[in-house]
Amino acid sequence: MRIGIVTQPLKANYGGILQNFALQQVLKNMGHEPITIDYVLEISRVRYCVSTLKTIILKIMGRKREFINFPRFYIRHKCVDVFIQKHVSVTRRVSKYHKKLIDEYHLDAIIVGSDQVWRPLYSPFIHNMFLDFTSGMAIRRLAYAASFGVDNMEYSDKQLKRCSKLLKEFDGVSVREASGVSLCRDYFGVDALHVLDPTLLNDKEIYEKLCQNVPKNSSKFLASYVLDISEEKKIYIESIAKQLELEINYFTADEGFSLTIEEWLAMFRDASFIITDSFHGTIFSIIFNKPFFSLTNEVRGNSRFESLLSMLGLERRLNASFESVGDNDIDWVKVRESICELKSKAFNFLRENLD
Image 1 (cartoon, rainbow, N blue to C red):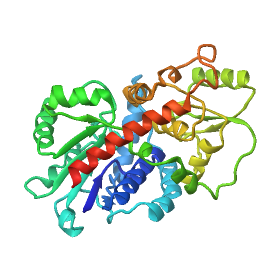
Image 2: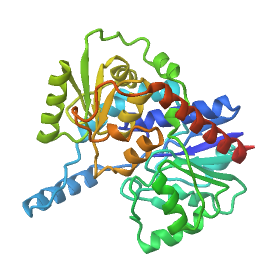
Image 3: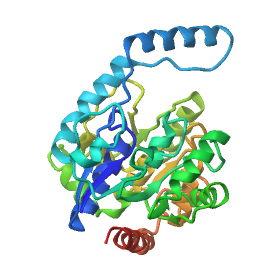
Image 4: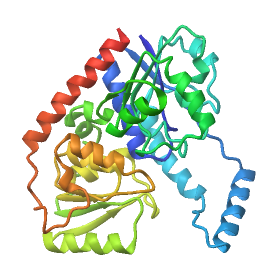
């Protein structure tokens, strides 16, 4: 079966690119031919100037708003582009979803997910993420590990009405967070299955193979992968590192780093301990069986962390203090057993809805 995948743009998000890679690997192993619709949200220079001017005005008024950093965004895109070309099957680039893509690539099904595809904040044309462009077509529609990102409803009445109607046309719906099951039931009138993020459906060896050519860092270090750094978080990280007697290696998306996907994975492979406020940073800490602490990130969505860690019995790793949680108290055998059981549930969902 030829399967199109609709997800967030494959540009400046390591975890977003790897979850798409992972889902494609799973589908290929099941005998399917997946291809991701390479959607790019075009941002013109005019829009950039208008956005910058608006940011300046809002900052003068005392409102919080961040500047768009185009140069850094571009560097990260170029940095990961080689990986996408080598490991991810994509369509030609499009700036709009439309029915022609279905016929052009002879698609039998479309899967939307994973990542925060159902959060309006990250999906300006939210109806696209409910596959409005496939209406009236004889094609299977699935959501795999789609995420709202938060546990409250952020849709307008108009968005909710339209998206609810579209979701009822799906052949199968699964979501990444437990709260997503409730949102689908209470607001959309649809039953959804709670499943693992696709990165957890593949074995660790697949990711080790991806970064095998990155030289190993033999020194013992604490990896800090924090997307939204603050003075409070820096103090926390330094305190943990001091108690563990580890040097700190800072890796972040916001301070000019331009790691390749392979180098990003090697960071988790080589670290002795990890502190992160990234959802996929947390996942890859788990995949590589590294002791870690996760910090909540309210703007980006806390429910993702809470749901993931509770599924695996790791709730105590969230916003933990060194005093309350030892640096090495994770029962990885038990965690792997939980993942194995949840993987079976996810594979059954895909098989039942794609056969």
